[in-house]
Length: 92
View 1: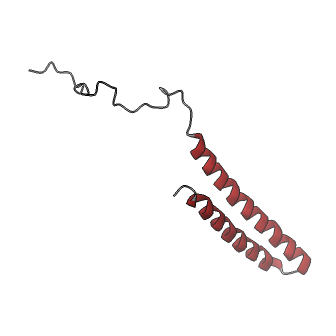
View 2: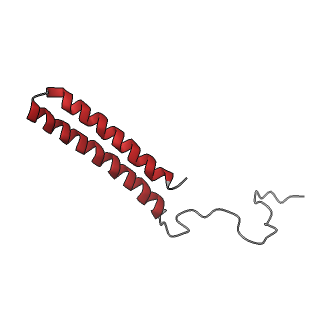
View 3: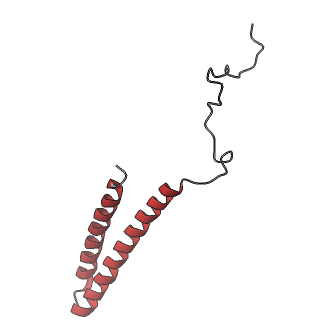
């Protein structure tokens, strides 16, 4: 006969098999993971910003209104993708 409780039977190993949440472990985030994502975000933002700035500079210098900006955005995006792929390969 059961007593109506929904508790699972104790573990044969005697330990607590339940995963600990962040409140029980002090709330510390996984810093290496956070740092890796922050680095990737900063890399993307920097590459895109440099592409835009160089594109605008080229447009002002040579009078090629939107062409320099478009080329700068495309090149900035390509460099950002290559940089992030290189960073991700470290973890694979």
